[in-house]
Image (cartoon, one colour):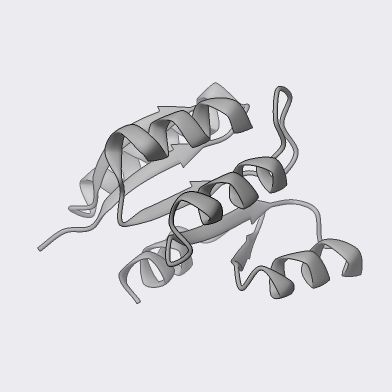
Length: 116
């Protein structure tokens, strides 16, 4: 059975391309958002198997959304997709037990993380 995913990034082209690629690989994209506030709202409404989220966004960063989502469901599977490779960011994600994919990313890596 395919996984359900929401894709959150402030870049609309990234969201569109990401969503199209995932659908081609039989991953069910059930929602798209463009900021942290919409990520939390979408999570509540759709209860996806996986959240793919950028960290640097307006109107609620990825970290804002991650913390809110984990309060709703401590077992939520969240994958941060970011160009921020700083030690501080990696450390924050480790503490939250969130896996990270570096931008620019390889789509096979994304598919693998979603399915595992």
